[in-house]
Every structure is written in C-alpha cells, then in structure tokens.
Length: 436
Image 1 (tube, rainbow, N blue to C red):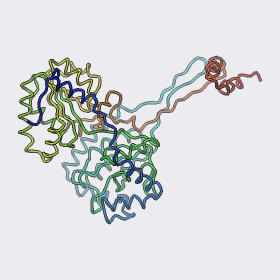
Image 2 (cartoon, rainbow, N blue to C red; image 1 turned 180 degrees about the vertical axis):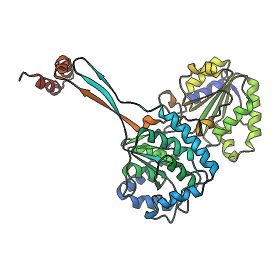
Image 3 (cartoon, rainbow, N blue to C red; image 1 turned 45 degrees about the vertical axis):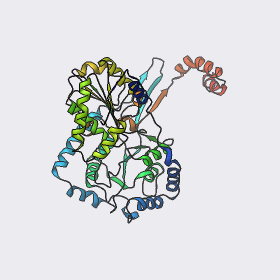
Image 4 (cartoon, helix red, strand yellow; image 1 turned 135 degrees about the vertical axis):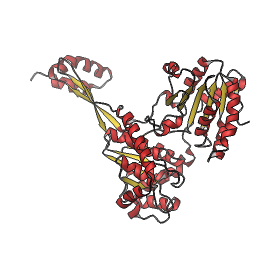
C-alpha cells in the first residue's frame, strides 16, 4: 500500500495533521558556505568567475564571447521549433498577458482644502533578472517559467529584463526557451546557472547587468544564493517543494484525484500530495488508481517515492472539517473536487491558487489558464501571494504641504516630535513658521 488512509480524529491522523501544520522548513543551508564563496568570487572576479563555474559544471568549452546568446542563435531557434509549439505558446502568452494586465496598479493622489497633497507614485524597477532552470540539461525546457516570470515584468514596465539559464554541455540553450523569451520581448539572455548566475544578477559582471529583482525557481544552490542576496535586492520568494491539497466529496472521481496527486509527485521526491475526503470508500479507490496510473509515468520512480514517503489521505467527518483543515494547512495548490465548489469558495481563506470543480486540474494553472504558477508554499499562503506584476513595482509616497497646511498641522508635528525626543524635527517646522 502506497499510503495508509487515516481518519482525522485518530491518534495517527492527529499526528499527521500536526506534522502538516508545522511543515515550514527554512532553506536548506547545507551549501551556505559554498554559495557564499561563489557569490564572493563572482562579485570580485565577474565574468572570469562565472565562466570558470560554468565550464566546470555545465559547458566545458564555453567562451566569454558566447556567454550571451547571440542574434544568430536567437534567429536559429525559430527554425528548431515546430508550428504546434508556436501555436500553444501564442495561446499561453495571450492568457497570461490578459490575466496579469488586471494586476497593474495606478498612481493616485489625495488633495485637502488647505492645500495638502498626498499620494502614491507607482513605478517599475529598472531591471529584473529572470532565472530559468536548465531542465535536465535542456531536454525538458521550462517554457512556463519564462512566461510566468517574464510577462508580469513586461506589464510592469521593467525597462531591462535579463534572462539567465544554464547551457547544456555543448554551450547551447533550448530553442524553445529562446523562442518563448523572444515572443514576450526578451532578447538579453545569458548562459549561466546555479549560484553563480544569481550572483551575477545581483552584483553585475563585465557582461551581465546587475538587476533590482530576481525571480525564478531553482535547486538548493539557486535558493540559497537568492536568500543570501535578498537583502540588497528583491526576490520573489523562498519556495519549498511543490504541494497540492485535494478536498473531495462523494461526487469526486478517484481517477481524477490520483492523477492530480501524481502530477505533483512527479516534480520531486519531496513534493507533497494530500487528499482530505469525506468518503472512506473513495480513499480506497484512490489507492487503487495510484497503483494503476503510476506504471505509465515517465517519472514513475520519483512519483512513487514522493507518494510513499510524503503522500497523505485523510478521512474527515464532514465537508466542514475538510474546509477547516484546508485553511489551516494553507496549501500552495488547493483543488475543490466537490459537488458545489463555488459555494465553498467564500470560506477559503488561505491558498496559493484555488482550482474549482472536477474539470480543473492543477496542470491548467501551471501552463495556460492565465494566473501565475509561482505560488507560496509550506503554509506561507497565510500571508503571501503569487508572483505578479506587483513583484516588479515599487511605490513612492508623495507629500506636498502649502504654508496654510503646515501652519494647521505644525503643532501636532512638533508635539509628536518632542515626545520622541527629536527636537530637530520640531525645529524644522518652527523655522518655516517664523514670521519673516
């Protein structure tokens, strides 16, 4: 048996729930010192260090002249992809673009009768770094990462979008990634990965520009590097393993539940797939479906390890309890495989993304539905949100006082300043209000 179903009120079930509620883990810092050294080397030696690491771990013969993807490589990429890919890419870009355009924030002002003007000015950062993992040496290009990170940055108005991705052994980048980047207006692409790529984006090199925001997934070295540079720039988030929680009632189909559990499980042995169902028989049927479907997967070994080591099936007393559990766990992907998901939706408080109904697999959100697939994990959905246009925006407060306004507020400003022992603050008001 891959998973032992547990009732929520049993001692085992309660222990399992407690484990899920406390699943937050800080970034794996076993590579902290190594990453710190890599960042230091890139900061001091620039391109030389980036090339040294890239030659050692990715492309032995890469030269400085080939560190940036050339115009010829960008053009050639279109000859290496087929029309079906281009059609799907066009559809995905359209959906993601339309969705994220609604996220754009406007600057605003408030005026008062005494002449005071206050407001907020919204501006994009100057430069954003988009990190795209290599995808098994380029054999599984993560096109969706290009789109989900690059499109919101473009909508925000970021002037310079820099994409980094590790090359394969021949020093090449997947043409699918190159075409996807170009289709959303990104042409500054560099062949560098891991911690040295993040360091290059953070500090800049002779060839790779420094940026203000770094986004994109990666392995433990990428995650640790992002964590270490986060004080000097913004990062999207420190993400944990991918996770899904499926709330299922009697209307759910076991085959659909098992398929979506496996869709998460194939990411990583540490991926977390949870089912909370009101139906004991459905739990048994899901186990049968997991066994049946595992055999046909290309990543069956990874999925099996994930389901066996981390998979959870909980049997709740009723839908009310199942919803409460979902809110407490605050999962990355929440699927509502229930008879009336729209009725339940207003009661959901914490989730990275919510998938409603029996025909809405989480995979739709990964690729083409429109919302971003970069989502909070490990329970952080209780206070954080998906990557979006706002990730690439900053807000400046605007304050303008007339003389009348300062006279009206002056005593209040001075009272609070003096209370805090900041007499120069108070004096800065007094000097302006002196009779001339």
